[in-house]
Image (spheres, one colour):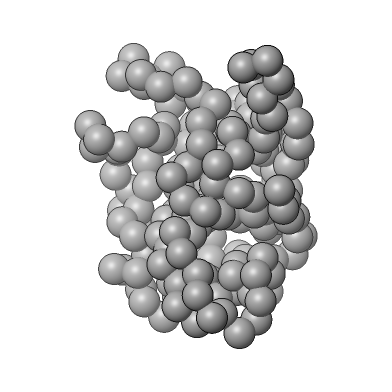
Length: 172
């Protein structure tokens, strides 16, 4: 499995955070399986921004000349009250229904323990494997079928703001 982490992913991260806070966020629908709130797919809201971000992610994980990309991109906000959601029916350790998942951490001065952890299966049990600490403007990518979870989200006064990428297909 390929895991990737890159610091200082965006040259204009502060501008991207400003953009993220100007957007509307929505709770999940009954058929969705995430905690927190997300924007609409950024392809609908700002196609130029969507494509520049998707190409940047893809260029790091695959090859620079990849063209046909099927992906979703969202800003996501999560805070400590979301962990107590009584309607959360699914294990917090989960997989994504995509070939590659990507995250950029966008909360300045977030607790490093509010990152992402992947797991491996040992005797049908998920055991911790790779830890990605939350660092402002750090991008991580990993296979969508890797079990993972958000780590501790308490400790900060701000929401855990991330940019989420879900890649469903890539063709040259």
